[in-house]
Image 1 (tube, rainbow, N blue to C red):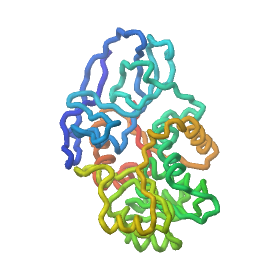
Image 2: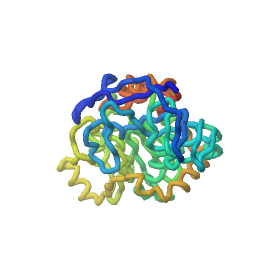
Image 3: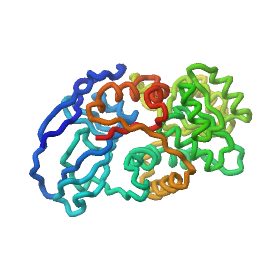
Image 4: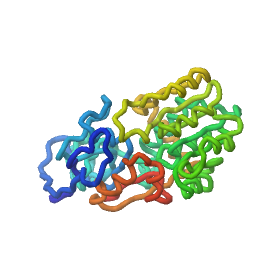
Amino acid sequence: MHIQRVVLNSRPGKNGEPTPEHFRLEETSLVSDLNDGEVIVRTLYLSVDPYMRCRLNEDSGSDYLAPWQLSECLDGGGIGVVETSHCSTCSEGDVVTSFNWPWQTHAIMKGSGLQKVDLQLTDGHLSYFLGAVGMPGLTALLGVREKGHVTKGANQTMVVSGAAGACGSLAGQIGRLDGCVRVVGICGSDEKCKVLVEDLSFSAAINYRKEDVSAQLKKSCPDGIDVYFDNVGGAISDTVLAQMNKGSHVILCGQISQYNKDVPYPPPLSEKTQEILQSQNITRERFLVLDYMNKSEAALFELSQMIKSSQIKVLETVVNGIENMGGRYYVKIFFLTSLPSIFLSFCFYSLQLHFAL
């Protein structure tokens, strides 16, 4: 069987920005002989996520993320259908998913590493299993629940940076449903701001590229900030932290403005910001969704019910063709330092990006 796959051609370096030249599309053959426990799957959707920037380095900087190897096929979240099975737990026609799905049109995988999906959870929207009813959705829901300390009736204000991203867009909606009276998103274009307010029911949105973020936060958050879902880090987060109330909480989800820099994770804070955290007794603990996988089944079901009842909206873009997977879309949307604005400059009404094969 002839297939196509995307391999790592070269590394950008810890301080470099990825370019299309760092990826290579190859044509190869897939043997049809299977060992016991193996299946052949046809890829339907692949997900591109910001954490993958770390895997481009020789050392990912994390013990739970293996670096991609040169000239080897890349992998990540994926979903597909079983076409041939020598596995007792997988049948032909099953729709399955994995966090370690190879970036190729067909693949031989171990059935034990695949999870069969319940199509009723998403009413047949398969791509949702890589987004709102997948890892980004889990990160948003469990991040808010475990680290946000949102309480109904407490008159809390939430701010979300990277608010037009897969996690941020869902986190803001969940924060509102859980009891925040005001949810403010920070993003990088007027178009995104419009989507957040008009489509996702954020209270307000701030375009950090055109507006004074500090001044707009004071206007949009007159009672200060109680919960901050931090996706970006850097100067924007310093500005938010400066306006947080005593005893408030930071959900440290991501630091995407720093991913092309050779800094530890989480990146160190300035002395001034550290003093604010201490004087205001602000909690700021790293959130890693993998630490809460014992709650994933119930959380995924709750997310599916929120979507079915239209309590939260899912906006996504699907780009067709594996030839785009490692090229300009992958690089343009996910790895430049100004990721939040670049994301929607390509995906106008898109908060999650998937590739259909």
